Image (tube, rainbow, N blue to C red):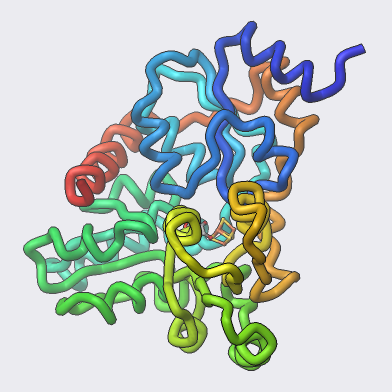
Length: 304
Ligand code: 13P
Ligand code: SF4
């Protein structure tokens, strides 16, 4: 009898399928994936798709929706449809329409961690890897930026524009967990370590970092760095990716409990069932997808 892994390999070939996984997926899911990356890299991968008839997307809802928006003719599947990003659900399309009336001169820049209906209201999207570049590319002096308040703050400290967070307190519950006191303690314990922090973290936490980086930029930074030890301030499975690619370096989590339980809903068994049954397919309403796609393509143009 075939185990899950052998069965996945067989089904992938039979269905001409590709498996994409975000950096926060656990080791066994990363190992069956054809490509592991950050939100931006996964968007680019989705845009480049030509060959596969079917894509199994191991990430949260907004990531799989983005792949479906870019590839309306491909079958995009998510192993567990309950894998939602709570931050993405903090901003509705209606909230954006209301803000546009209040700030008619502002451009709307949305973090890719947003719902398809919200994306359809945006002028341009961004990820944490290109947010500053995207905002700088716009002629507007005023920017409505959502849904992550901390990423909005990170951008506003780097550009000379007025950044208005939308909503007031959009946040990621995982990156809110980091604590300055514990980071000072880790600094004392590992004086030679480089501290890498994700921009979804609170500003006081970001201010302690050597580098504030998206998950993909953490991968590139560690590969280039002469450093041997790194304190990693993002979801804990980021270390799984970093350790796989850098077996001789040491990675210390900024907090062991920083787990995105939404990301962990996917399992190897669910990936197998997904390939077997062709479910659950991610669908985005055609009109919404058309508008959202424009904002996604503008992001690619702005961050080239
Ligand atoms: P990245 O774009 O850095 O992969 O981050 C996505 C995310 O959801 C972080 O919580
Ligand atoms: Fe959403 Fe936070 Fe999980 Fe990223 S870590 S997917 S922002 S809940």
